[in-house]
Image 1 (cartoon, rainbow, N blue to C red):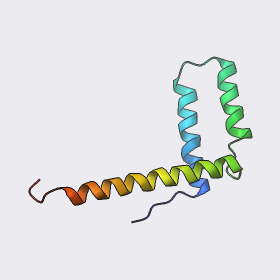
Image 2 (image 1 turned 90 degrees about the vertical axis):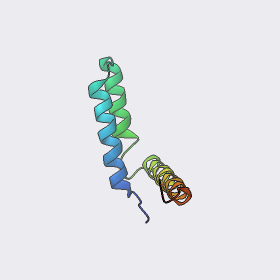
Image 3 (image 1 turned 30 degrees about the horizontal axis):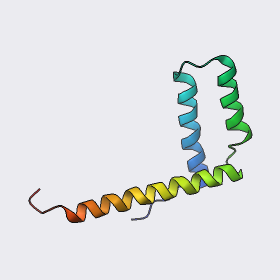
Length: 79
């Protein structure tokens, strides 16, 4: 099975994580503003940085799935 994030899906995931991080961590107001500005300026869904992040997320996801598939092949039937 092949699972792959599209740019918009990766942006939504990143956006949710950053929002939770900003809301739930004890940051100063200036640091919260800096993180939000970074997200809105540099990490737009169509930016080159977001394309690189999407590529990296897909590579990591694929490696994890391959590792999981290999470990299942090595398990004996009685386990």
